[in-house]
Image 1 (cartoon, helix red, strand yellow):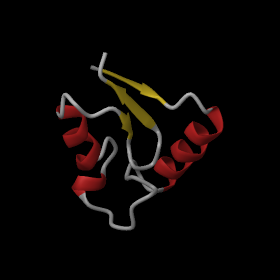
Image 2 (image 1 turned 135 degrees about the horizontal axis):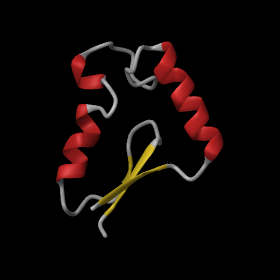
Image 3 (image 1 turned 135 degrees about the vertical axis):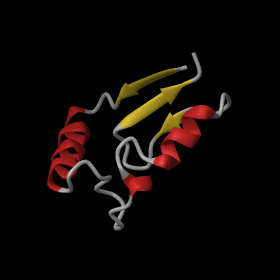
Image 4 (image 1 turned 90 degrees about the vertical axis):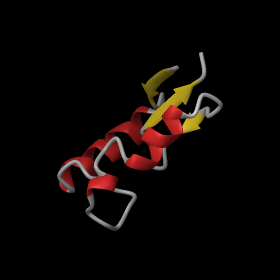
Length: 66
């Protein structure tokens, strides 16, 4: 398993700005909960799935199977 930042620098900068404004919570989610602290619970669960390959909800991270 490998997790990397999105290769699109504009998306990375936009999401990083949103994370900073929300104190480290996912800018794509409305609720400020521990589940939405980056890296969010949703993506942590996806990363744990050996068959999952793709981006997190906000497109900041990408998980590959290799």
